[in-house]
Image 1 (cartoon, one colour):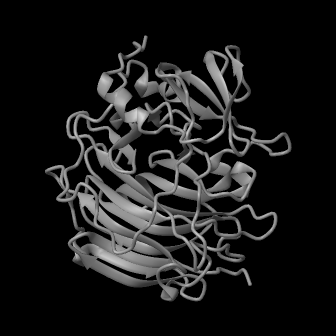
Image 2: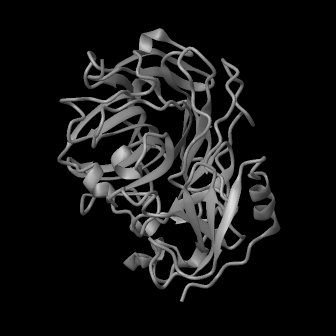
Length: 382
């Protein structure tokens, strides 16, 4: 049996910071069972948030992660034992960029929000394996990094790139860490913004976390399968990021950090500094229980036509257009063995694009605040 953990006052204070600030939230149901939630999981509250997404508040110790065979007796870690230290409390910015709001849901303390599988009745439920099969096409533009690391932090300017009508591809802007043993064998985790009509039923930028099981070559997003343990009752995985950046207009960013807890060895995700969302337990990994050896920051498009009929990436404009017009990911740092955020080793970083006619990188820069790069392009959309 998994014991329900006590919630410390310090965690309550962190979560209070994530108040809705006027966002409309409507309680449409209390108790009972809800579509998309396993029958053994009691729904404490169902919430309709602004924009139409429906979240079920489920006890934190009854979430899908604990169906994983290695997590049967897992003790939930409600907060990291420590956070990576940095020379800056808040990064001084080259540009004054306001933060985009992550999807906020007011679930009761002791529960976590789970997005309903069907946002609308006409959307067919799809697993992420169907959406981003490893046999499908992929293009990317950003920075590849080949070195030992224990985490990363970056600020991502969020756009809503367009896909052709009825596209089954996805386009994302995110951070990614892998533990690679050999070709075809790699665990992976990531976080950032996805646009995927086939998966979410619309063309909005949505916040997701991602896990790749390198042993069985299986992918999983958010709480879709037994993997990610969410502890935050107020951030709704899979929900809309708002507002998003406008080409040649106001820009908005999200601040994402992924790091390995130095005591428990779990891999944590936090947002906008030190706001914990949840973690991937160490037990579910095969090739990165202790560290990663690859990272990627930038844009990825994937799907059955990602190369032959490529969607937009980033703002849909080439990287050379620069700030306010091209997508950007910056203030990139990595976590070293001493749990410190440091600038990545420039000699181990490789800015690149898989197809320079569709997507480009530009403005690559390294300074004491980290790495920065513009990326993206129109793909095959004209």
